[in-house]
Amino acid sequence: MAKILLIEDEGDTAEAITDCLQFANYTVEWVDTAPEGLQRLFIYDYDLVVLDWNIKAESGLDLCADYRRRGGIVPILFVTARDAVQDRVAGLDTGADDYLTKPFSLDELLARVSAILRRPRIAKIFDILQVGNLTLDRKCGLAKVGDKEVVLHAKELALLEFFMRNENQFFTAEELLNRLWSSESDSTEQAVRKCVGRLRQKLDSELEPGYIINVKNLGYKVSKPDANYLPTSD
Image 1: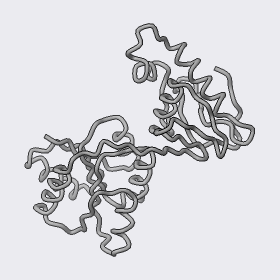
Image 2: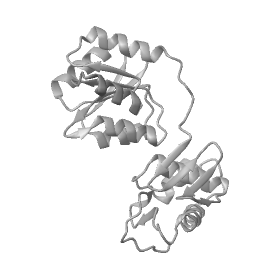
Image 3: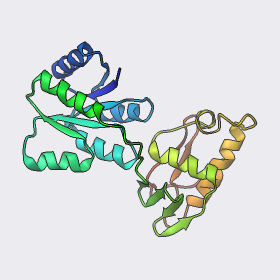
Image 4: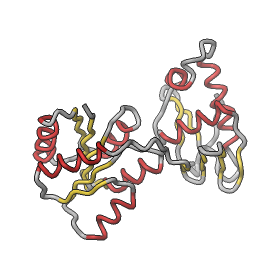
């Protein structure tokens, strides 16, 4: 049965939605913050996200936009008290697949969920990923910092795509080895570090150094450059 991620900060609402979906034999995981929801979306596999618009003063709309910008393709159903036409348009334009206005009946929720899950999963991934002025066109394997093209080898492209899909998340050399090099029996953590080093060197420019950050005991991440960043060697 389908696995659903519920991102909702109102306990009573979350409990009612969870009970309803579980009674219909769906598997449900519930989180009450936007950062945790976004993190789970890039770690675990889900068939649908039920997303509240406002989550503890954070914006579900921003989460949706961020997720789609990083290439996320899991369908999203917004649930919100916002019922203005412009809000519905904003939600759909940002990348939501459907929009349900609070208060709603649980029967309608189940009908919307069922309708979304019946749709064929479009096996597309957003072709353009972006972090700051760094862009990656997956379709043609082209990376750019601003208008400057960056020539990358296949493994460097795969590594950059992984980092950009998981912006601001740290990964150790061991984690990268297991995720991206696992099928290569002769690969090592040192090979991973060298690949990251080559990638970082290619991405750094005089105007914007520091897209790849290395922090001891945490690992590597891709993020928007810090104006005060001083590059370090591995």
